View 1 (cartoon, rainbow, N blue to C red):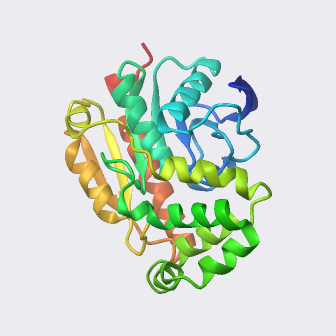
View 2: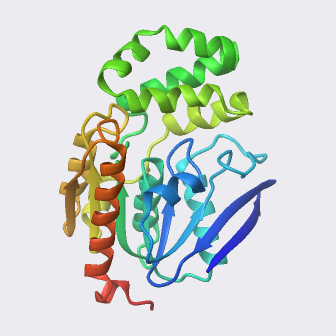
Length: 275
């Protein structure tokens, strides 16, 4: 089963995908990602619903600003409603992991389990690891994509990432090449400066199974953030996988194995049975 959906919210047409069968998982992309990123990240064998957030993939920006995790989370919940999901597993990569975590804390009756992949935020807004994204966004907004890319490529930040986290650098340079780079730069700036809007106490109260996945060689998604979130949730398990920058095929193979194993082992848990 592969279905498409479209939601109109605040003047933005948001596109979504509803694919597969079995246990329902709402799984979201990262900042700058899209359905294609999720299709690569998430394993087959389950029903997956993904909404392309405002300004991402084929979704429009809309009329409302600033962009925020609250806005994106409300949009994703609307997509789950459209898909007819009452109770589901929430998950995502990077920004998508934050959306999933916020969903679980704000709508505990709806979320049966969590899958958080390479989280970039913990509990505070504008974490230091978001600074490279803020820097790229500000250059695009001030100088435009072409000149901004040239300045960024020569920056100390780019030099450091080339040495420590080349996969991050590739993603950041891609922001300058987007068709609507200036419009999307505002999304980058707003989200990079925002936070999940949940506390460690909120997360500690989550009495649901959770999988948190992290890897080294990633300046934007520190392994320490994944450790912190896993430690904060009473029923969380943590998995460290091969960095994408070291071996992409192994990274995704291990990630699929971790997610599949977690979902299969919890598929009969009472919390995952639809209410």
